[in-house]
Image (cartoon, rainbow, N blue to C red):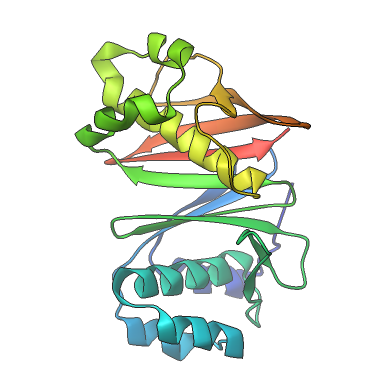
Length: 227
């Protein structure tokens, strides 16, 4: 699926900014990653914000403000639109691109922002690899999932499970999901990248998801797309 048809001038414009990754992802999605280097003022000068966005930004402080600006600018560059389409959120906080059929998922970690576009329910998660994830294994891992862990690469393997469930949570988009009770990942052999399957079950809701993951420098990148 082709999301955005870039002209030659639009491609040149995009390659002049610090996009460190842009590619097709999963079956019907497009992924972009940006490493934040600019000052806040550079984003403010380039983006025409709506009144609602300005109100939100005026209340945001510190890292949250920087992450918001970075992700919205990344979204704009990925579309290649001449006029920026605002990123709106529904009643549950799930984002979508105004005046389009595209759903969007956003994730931040350290100085990186990741954005995933699709016409299907999707979610993305980017996390810097940290040893302390082992301390919360009991909060998000089911018994059969923990039994499938690769001890040699346990930290990376845990980050894939966490990122997969975080991504499915975002794709589900209605909050109030238990990471152990409502979500499961089919056990898999860990490699540096791969495609796996997950399921969300809650009351009458039951959906399967295709999940793609990839180790990216010191980060684990995971995306989920509803089947």
